[in-house]
Image (tube, rainbow, N blue to C red):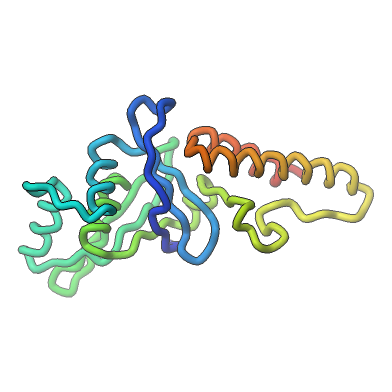
Length: 198
């Protein structure tokens, strides 16, 4: 499985997600983003660790880290490995007695544990391709994810598509700035559909 290292870019609540939170990941060596909707408890566990706050008693993820360490094991990395039926799946990679084990997990739990264990967060390339999007604000080149301009019979159609894609990318950037990740995901899908149709 091809994987891409990512980091947490932001965490926000959204009224449109019914009390859930949007966790936004960003690839470390690129400008793709991946929004994931997570629950309130997991969002709190991630936010506390990001802010360096220690609760008076250990949370579940602190307990899990302590348990792994007390069993002479260590967390190597976490991977958001799959997207099926609009649900993300993750794996926690643990080393025990020089043997590597994969443990299935929810992405939010895997990420909360990764923060506590100070290990990298990876996303499968296939997941980034399916659910990720590129913000044009940081797109320094001529847009590897946007449709190339063709100087041929289809020039007029191509430039019309590019204009639509450009307008959608502007809306996508605005949605991200307003932390409206649900709208951003829909805009991302529209951009992908336009880019792939020839």
